[in-house]
Length: 219
Image 1 (cartoon, one colour):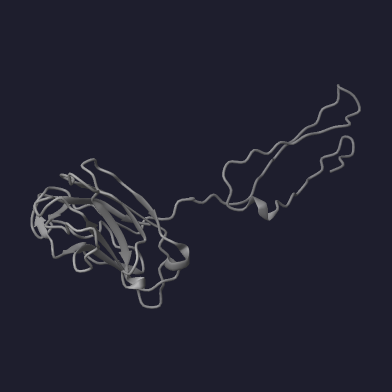
Image 2 (cartoon, rainbow, N blue to C red; image 1 turned 45 degrees about the vertical axis):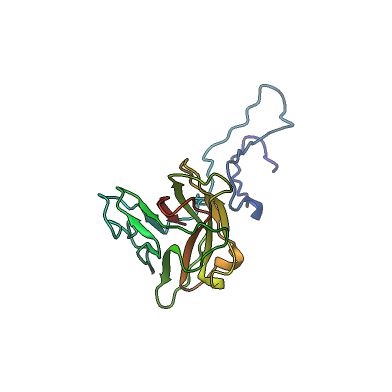
């Protein structure tokens, strides 16, 4: 704006909506058409109003499985229940628990290439009465203690929202520990009621092959 000579002129500038939910931004203030190079342009009391928010969705639940190995698993609960929702214990169905420390391990997994809907690891999140849940992502650590000589062992994540009919995501299970990060589709996981997630395994090498899960996190 125009600044008369030798005058303090307060200026209030409204920032447009393009400054909502942004990352780093640098503001620069320029002056031109001073009378000569000996004149000064003085600025004082620069104030920016707004808010800074985390871009990452909040963590709703974490299953750490910490503790000495036991069967059933020694610690199948989340570390802390979130406000206005409850996480179930992390459980398995139709596999053989292994008593390994600080993880959730089992054997006896499906050795075919077709998902067996009766065999899985699972957990449920149930919003409190009058509430809905918006779920953004799931992260978990997984590995197998051996892989088949031919083909690939694959995990499959599904949910009760479509009766476990299709994969939300899938990936390979190898002897190397991996921590896939899975984006949950907003079209399906925004303002939802109770949801059960199940993780299936296909093409396990043999009955004694152990598959391990750890640090299962929902955001």
